[in-house]
Length: 114
Image 1 (cartoon, rainbow, N blue to C red):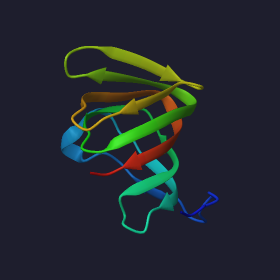
Image 2 (spheres, rainbow, N blue to C red; image 1 turned 45 degrees about the vertical axis):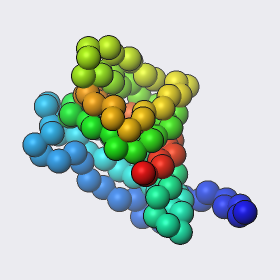
Image 3 (tube, rainbow, N blue to C red; image 1 turned 90 degrees about the horizontal axis):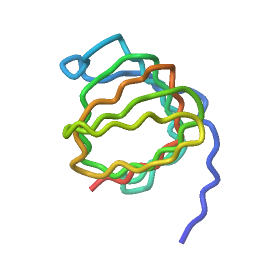
Image 4 (cartoon, one colour; image 1 turned 90 degrees about the vertical axis):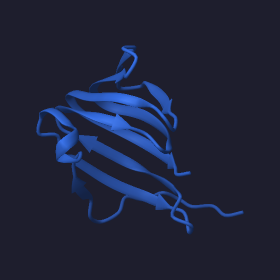
């Protein structure tokens, strides 16, 4: 077993959703990945996104804790959740829908790939 103290990396990574998934706006992701397991299947860190909406399809498991901002996550079946600072949730493989960043959103995440 090991212990890893998470520290902020020097340089964040920037990106965004694939262009064919964007539904509105021009969302930009900034990611501070603070942990990657030796096998490359587990990650933890902080993610920030500017306003915009895009289609999501999860093949991974993810825990999220919203630190600031407001987003709405809508499942393909129409159920919808508005999340803001203090909210915590998980997304499981097979979750499909839309992530809409209403106000620039920052979240802490833990991702486990299949």
